[in-house]
Image (cartoon, rainbow, N blue to C red):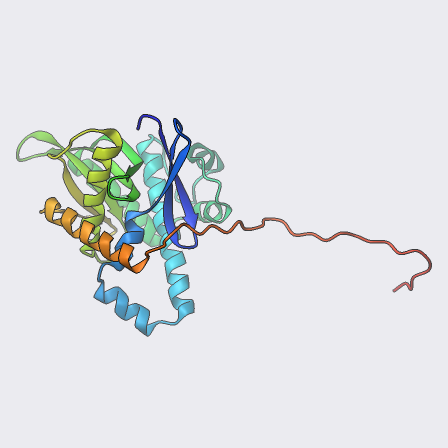
Length: 273
């Protein structure tokens, strides 16, 4: 990335990224791909939002984010060669991952739910089937040219049994029960942002979505068949997002972690209870 730094920002307006240029001291604030893709149509999700209360929506979103984050962290640990225990991630593993979010830490330490356990079994089954060779995981990428950023889950090589050779893939892990076309667009955005960030042309790379906890083998692997079409559709969605959010900026509110009051004393007598 040369003289660029990239930092994920958790904001009230979704995920944003701070791209810093250490040479000239400039900062670019870019929306995440997932932020942009909120504009992409999703009939099932729209119907659920229309028929659910704000409290139900908020709780479901928080639970989904927490569960997704936990699965990503568990997989990241496995990629680092560590075992994940059913009774929760250990303190040492949390330190190794560099996690500081207290709410997330509490959830990571909780025992795995049945769905989380099935997702990890599915990941093991996928791993044995495709014998992956990892190039990188949890990689932040950005495109100043197109104005967005994101974090791709995994890039590396999968073994093709029919062709008897390894092929380059960018993969996104999902634990959602259904897949939306927007996931294809998300992967295409990571492909292009990776090329810009690392200045490496990987036009031959294939894109895949690994859905965990599904089917008898507890995973489903779907390849994005037309990544160029998905990329064009992402750019169209980005234009719609910018048109809907003409002055979009990351909104960050610093939350206090401690609360206390001063203790005062008065002169003279006071009643006693």
